[in-house]
Length: 230
Image (cartoon, rainbow, N blue to C red; front, side, top):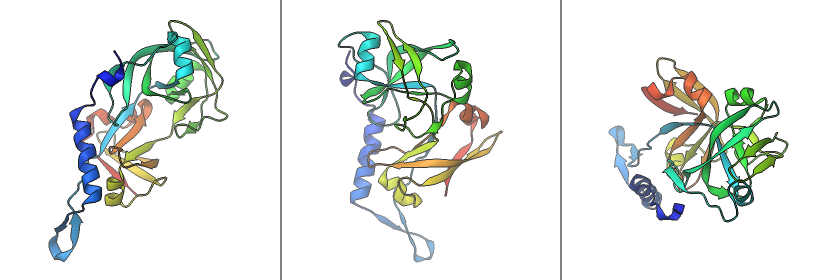
């Protein structure tokens, strides 16, 4: 089944519509003391981004056969993005492998493997911390699919901590695209994460991505609250 045959979750569509309307028509509210505040309230979500692959069409067809397409396993939080049903095995220079690594869709112009530090140690790879897409000079790996093998020359990274936010969210927080901010996680293992990269786009939903090691370190799944700080 093509990914286009599975509709985007209603919740995502409703959030996008609300954000677009807010950006076009700002409704100020009277606050105590005569000040005004925005009627729009950001809904901050923090998710753990486990190991995964972004894939080019060329490499997908090598791994899964000519004409192969990604099919939706489940939709992710960001509009249009999904975890696919397609799984592969990745192997490092130490010949150790991690199986069942999921490919995320939609397809991209390049192939990129995102790992945590723990995953990197297991594979014998030392990837740099990079924003998604900045793969020049990064190490590669071997990707094994049911129909073929790809020797990836570069593209293995540890993803830089980042937050997706709409222009509406950025306006409320006073943040700008490309700015570095902080994330405070309140839990039984509280932590403040520095160097969170802001990525601003009108259709983004407000979401911070941490990798598995970072999420486990602060017990994110049991956090009582999260907060973005300048």
